Amino acid sequence: AQKITQTQPGMFVQEKEAVTLDCTYDTSDPSYGLFWYKQPSSGEMIFLIYQGSYDQQNATEGRYSLNFQKARKSANLVISASQLGDSAMYFCAMGGNFNKFYFGSGTKLNVKP
Amino acid sequence: NAGVTQTPKFQVLKTGQSMTLQCAQDMNHEYMSWYRQDPGMGLRLIHYSVGAGITDQGEVPNGYNVSRSTTEDFPLRLLSAAPSQTSVYFCASSSPAGNTEAFFGQGTRLTVV
Image (cartoon, rainbow over all chains, first blue to last red; front, side, top):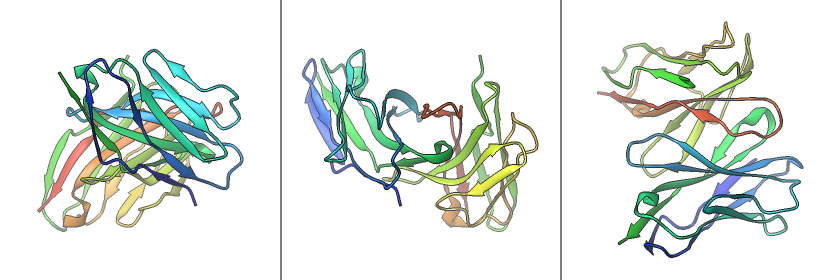
């Protein structure tokens, strides 16, 4: 069975600093995708970044990068140069067969001015 | 450029009432799914569909029915609402082309009293 674990219920970061949000996963599928979504207080789910299980290089999208360590089954999100607008819930998710997604419990990030 | 549209956005039901949450997408995606989000938890998969006429159960299917008569629409039915079904419901769609991100609707906040 697929499982996603996010061990940081809440995080604080100073504006303009970098922050790492942890995510570990468990699956027996050889092919899968790892995703990060942002959920602001307004409630919508915003896609941030994707990493395929066979991708050799870590994914990057602007200020977001995914630190993918396949042997450790971890897919941490790194946000560089934090902004006040980054304050939100962040969810790590795994997509497998038929794009069924399994989500972690989320990390609430607070960016301090 | 609507993407995934869910209606209604808010709903209050009495225990035992039935209702249908509507979901429509205009991206011609084969895959659609329903999730629920409870406080302090990530999204959990209720039901999913890989195409018109094909549906299957996710992690938490009890109390919910789905059908998929067209590519565009994927309604979720609560036959006899219970307070345990109080939650925020998200509909999502995605392309079957490899591991691709899911596009989410804005969510439906359902309260069962």
